[in-house]
Image (cartoon, rainbow, N blue to C red; front, side, top):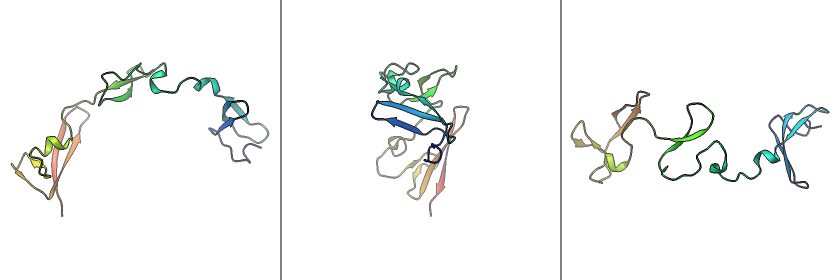
Length: 130
């Protein structure tokens, strides 16, 4: 009856009476297959509690998570290349206008864009508004 009741492969079912959870592997009527997942998730309430992740966040501010080179775990990484897109970098006099380095003037009706390349370099350009 599982398919006719709206269950599909990947559906979750929680047995609140017995405190168990299940995931549907096959929802065929009369032959549904469910696997208990209670123990798989039991005890892990934080990202760092998992066995294939960094143990803590110390010194990781501003970094991102990525799959390691062996594709067996997660680790923290730093994007390749240099520079940033922070307002303090591109509006050095804090007047609300982007300082356009190439022209040596400020232009309120231009927007600056960045193109990051896989080689680790970044190109900047301007687009007129209006």
